[in-house]
Image (cartoon, rainbow, N blue to C red):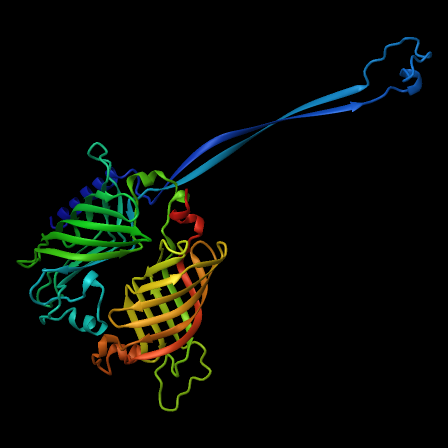
Length: 480
């Protein structure tokens, strides 16, 4: 009986989800089959004289030839007409987006979810302090943080809901995984809720139907695989531009999990963001992928560079007394998660503003820094169409520590989803955790070294995975 109830609920949810979607695919493919007929007519004309003397057979220019005796000869012009017909079958394939929303990651920092045991991960729920995160996520101690809770969602997916007489802007969707934490994960009481593939219904009321879209979205959700809960709320959405979105949240979570403690229901308010999160209007699902309008020069999943730096040590090995690294070429690395480069309406849209979910730079032992949603300003200059670009840039990391990165990157487009690059620059960074002490024998110190202030030159080779570079003709600003 205990297994029957959740299994029954799961079957009902799957049936509702599948019945509401025309097909559970991200791409809708339509094909038209034609028979192409080609007709061709060839006309060949030859002039062939009959045997005999031409002088005897034809009149002279001066008058009659006395030898022809007035005979009338047939025409010497021969015309041949040949008609050909070829028939071939042709299949025209068109690809359309079949989704209203599809993304990678969404997070939020929540307010007023707990008076004690605050999680304290800052706005958007991702401005974490490594040492505090590892030590306090399971702590029972009270903190003075403003954002007491957090919400994390992975791979949001929404499809058009064809109910209510096909009323527009209704969607049904899910997440691969959802986790809502009103406070720290206490060892004696766990008030968080989590679920795989929760079901969500949404109705968007658009205040602006041009990029970036602005909408008010009431939502009703149900978690069933993991915790059993209902999530009722509303969001104010701005996006999607280059896959980047901003949201404000208000809602209430009702926890129906049999093992849930009393008082595990909680209201929440908060602010969130999402990356690589793309939203289509209903009418845009009738537009082919190749005609879609883009706003970014570059969107990627992961970019990584191996670096040669001016540091006297290497990030990969703790220096010991007498150790020298004179012949070590690669001393560190840099990576960006979910980078986005958005074209700005200045200098022919080549000036850009960008960010990434996380940026990490390590140039030597203890000389490393990381930034959440850093601000990146640069200039995008194509050198060879669809093949090579250069981008001088400045990146400012403001949290959890301060860093300034001045550099230039040369990008080579290998294929649709892979890039290769050369990068060089100068980085200045303060100690991680704003000078807070870190246990010398702690996990971080053993892995990367106790962080310190540093300023270093660097150069390196980079590779982008699922890294898409768009051409000028693909940007919406240059489409007719």
